[in-house]
Length: 247
Image (tube, rainbow, N blue to C red; front, side):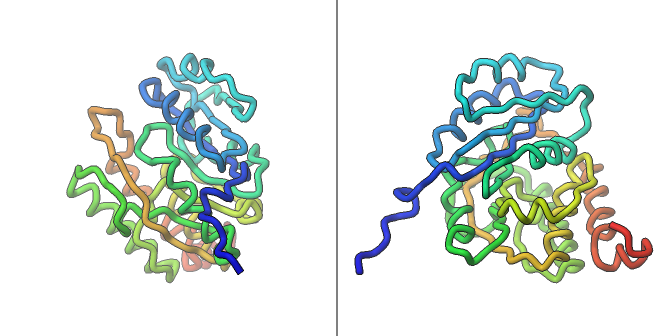
């Protein structure tokens, strides 16, 4: 029996890409073009989180029936944008894509492989494993990411290497099974805790990463790290018990 062709050659437009966007006029158009160039992309749902720059004008340049642009009237944060995008996503698989060119849609095939093989329900793209290219940037930022991942693992009993990664891919049933609450970057540990509590099968694959500096527009800060710790505890099984079983 002949070997199956490479996954890239079997690509089908089965992926709903959900992209939160806030003040990314320099990068959002190019990011969208790269997403739409992927043979896996069935739809691109961009949620503009009340950008005050030219992001919407850049998005208006797109002419592709797969693109849907949703506008938040008031800036609410990445988590709120993702909730709206997830509710609109129609494909059997969903992936989160930031609008800042840090993550490469060429890695979609890596994320989808464990899902399509039936091995996984959720796949995290790790910036800290595998041999993919990585831009070298902030030492303390990477330490903070790793500490948050260790804390998350301690409460979820998972062994992830990169809980805070943007690249999270899901079978659509997973997202339909959980109710998300966080409005900002606390959405990352919240998703992780709720996926773990749901008993969904989680895989991790190494991805490339081209991180940007704060001068280039990076938005996450130390306050988000503090909130992440709160969310790690709040949405864990222990946190649920302490809150009387809700959430």
